[in-house]
Image (cartoon, rainbow, N blue to C red; front, side, top):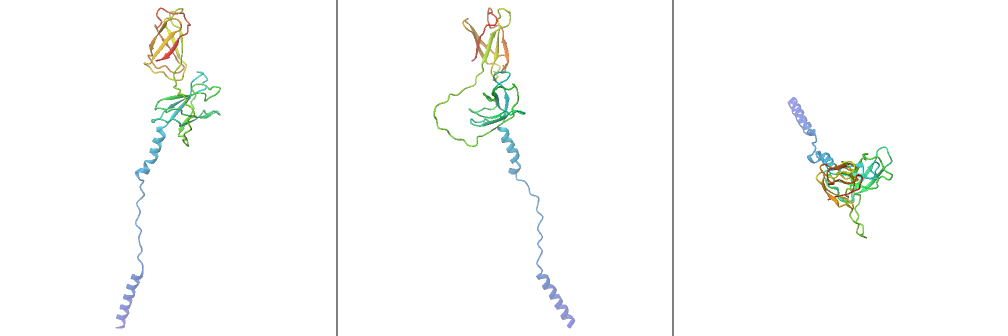
Length: 232
């Protein structure tokens, strides 16, 4: 009888002990965190935005060999707005500066930043540059209307070719840094001679380059005579 009581008491004690012990919670294994599509695309999107507005700069302009000017081209895929600032520098020199766009710069278009290099610098020098929006855009009070200066190519022209003494040809030189596209019409005239006409460019005329317009001066004209050329 006593042994049964002891066995019952021991059984009840074990049951109570089991109930009293708190259950150990097993934390489920967390799956590795997955990057959201928005976060995954954030870096490529930032790179794409940077590519939208990109500029290339080169020393080019007047004088032809050692220009004072800088040619800035929109090499991105978005219009760069008026007021944006181009920050440029020439490697291994102390020459650097900022240029504020005076007008919107279309994709593939360029602008000549005149007088950026006082004293001149060898033509063709690449100047690493970036473009950014101004920190603040403030509207200045209107005091006077500023005329908009549209860059146009300028030319030198001389009667030269064959025959040597009284050529029928003229040689046209593009004095500017602006490329004149193939198919553009140039109007030429020899002052006080009545000799004039139009001539269509058979190829692109780069800044600083020359091209001969053959057989335009009917009957010839004294070699070396100056002529005027304008873009129509």
